[in-house]
Each structure stands twice: as C-alpha cells, then as structure tokens.
Amino acid sequence: MYKTIKIPEEAYEEAKLLSEELEKSKTIAGVFNVNLSTAISYAITKMLENMRKRKRFISSAGSWKDIENLDKIKEEIYLDRKISKRKEVLI
View 1 (cartoon, helix red, strand yellow):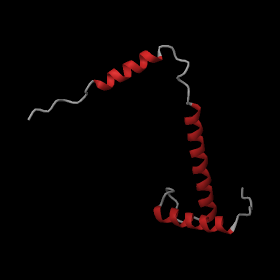
View 2 (cartoon, helix red, strand yellow):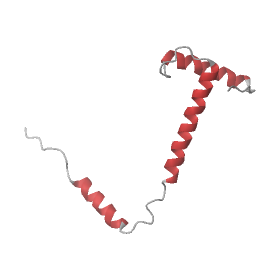
View 3 (cartoon, helix red, strand yellow):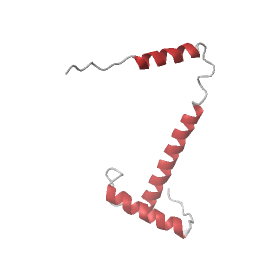
C-alpha cells in the first residue's frame, strides 16, 4: 500500500542521493534499480532497527544492581583477567 506524503525539498534531495548510493553499493540484495520509495523505506527500516537496538541496550542498564555477591563476581572477573591464556613463546 502506498501513501503520498509531503517532504521538504532538502529531504527529497537527500533521499535521491541515498537511492543513488544504495544502487551503487548494492546494499539491498537483489535490488538493482533503487527508486525513491525503496530508499526511503530502507532508511526508515534501518532507523527503526537502530532505535530498537538502542532501547534494548538502555533497558539493560542497571540490571546488575540487585544481584547478590556482586563484589565476589567482580573479584572473580578481575582474577580471570590476570590469568594468561596465551602460550609462552620460547626463543
């Protein structure tokens, strides 16, 4: 389903540039002729995907605050980091 929308001239020019870049870089698999609606749809999809990733990242902030023995977990992490996992090279 298509909808007609009004956008500023500057946004229209940027959408044209985006469609040309997408066509050149073949970013969208199987699409060789990228029209404006495809470019705008691609941009919106990518923006929504980035917003969702950011929301998931932000929602995880502070999720460790209620864990008991957090100091013990931190201590174990730092001790594990001190152990070298690489083999010693003899010359």
